[in-house]
Image (cartoon, rainbow, N blue to C red):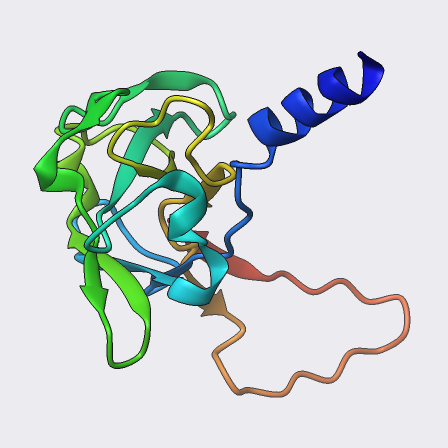
Length: 167
């Protein structure tokens, strides 16, 4: 009986697969087109019962402090993902890609992070990957003083003012 319980739990939880997606460019802005790429070798489609390389993006939004804001409007329902969120499979290099502009795809301009996982169309029974979260926005600064690439010599104990503006 214990062995059966163990096997049932193993089968239930063995469907979650760990992926390491690449987002390019990274960092990125909300209004910039990004491409999410997942290596096909990271996903065993047979475990999820997937045919025709049908994998889907399931997304959500977070603020800069990791507080949930909402789901991606094009997700569909968990048991039937929207075709809008289907990854494009490239057999030549065995990758799945999805390209979109975050503020358009998510219909939101105020979120600070996007989260997502990869799943089978029917995500029941944990037919999904681990969660992945990427921050939005690049830190940018402009050095006012001293001038960029300049050299300043200071006497010991002297003060020196540095001025910069950041986004």
